[in-house]
Length: 343
Image (cartoon, rainbow, N blue to C red):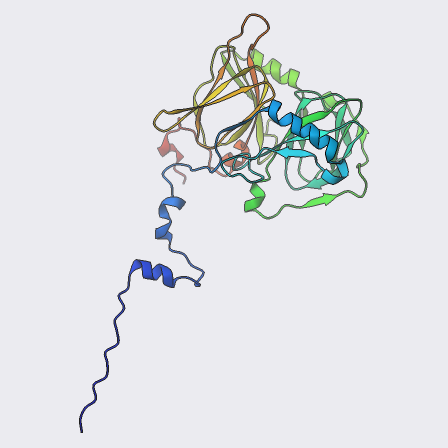
């Protein structure tokens, strides 16, 4: 009887590409295909340096005051959206900024949330904010804190708009989905007026400017801190800077990112690239700009013109230094890399 010969199965050559294709549906991905992306040689922020010009944004904000009611808005804010990401809530990769408007006799209804907020008052008189039963007045240059889970509402007496810059840690809640918001049953949470100058959540500009002016040199920087010397929150911090007219700040490069607001004066910030190419951000009073992590930057104040012109530059800065530091991620280009080794 003849022996039947069976066909030999075709041998399919294996390959790295075939392996990746075969992984589909396995809920796994090959690290080797994304090693450079996940382990970059340098920090790789998605957000880019940018300036939001107050003279351009303010008319839109005032239009919103006419066509968007306080009830429709809850908070009438134009968010400062970084063009590098083109989505909220990213002013930098870790900081949310927005310009908020309250019109006369309006109430931004009471609510509370996990997110921490700080507010730099830009424009207006007669505005107030009530934080967990304590009502304080808003004045230009004030920094007012809204600690986590405190009931708060905002209002405005008198004429004209009240505008301020909000800084919140909202981007963190894209990574930690633990953010809650609760609305109070009434538009305003019961509150009493207190002495704004004595409030621990209000930092008056004239006091900060005096500290800056008392510091020697062409550049001065002072942190906003609580009475015990600690940062204003565990996630976001704040500082103020002075640059003498016609002078510059030191070149800095750090793993923190920051949102700057121009309190007074005009000038420019130079971002130095890896091959010393330069990107220039020009700004003036009331503009807001951002510096991403690890950007190498330097501020320059315009020269005073002798006729009441530019003068010294004063800047307000909201940054993520407290969070980056507490996580052990803060460093500057001046640090000895070997000294960063943990044990």
